[in-house]
Image 1 (tube, helix red, strand yellow):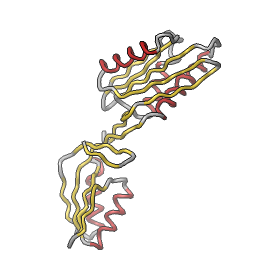
Image 2: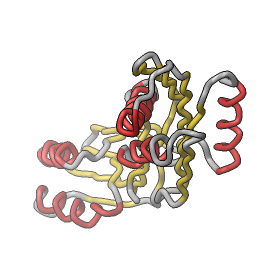
Image 3: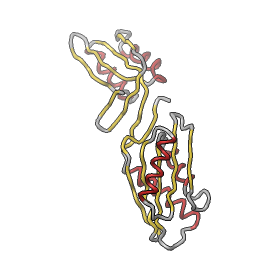
Image 4: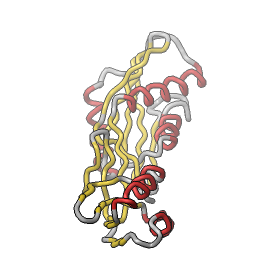
Length: 215
């Protein structure tokens, strides 16, 4: 996978339904042991709550998934929570939703909506990072060609790490492996074969709000 989404900074969100409180706490985890430690920590923190339901996903291809209704009717809490995490394309993530019962039954449909709504609120408070894999490419061309090359990077959402202007212009870019061949071809076509390209070994990086962070 060229792109993996995960929780860079955890968060917490809360909703209320018919006086029941649903508190979602979400964090990043690297393995099942970390997930269980986090779940147990939330249970101790909210020891007086009626339910502490959870869902977590592990693996670059979301290979491992676990969830629990923790006493709620089957398939009304853990699985709906897991569905939200899956739909967001997240992995290495754990969500626990704590419920303080308000005295009114919500029904199965109401429970599903509440637990999913709580997870969405929790995710809204998190910082989500896209860990991407790319091939570093150095492109050298003349001043007439650099505008065309930068247009191509913008059009294909390709990060430009830096651009150096001297006798020729040198741009350092990150190209997803799946796009490498087509991007190389387009760049050579755009510069009538004048651009010089050299590729490095694939690397991982984070695409965050404040820019690109190499790993």
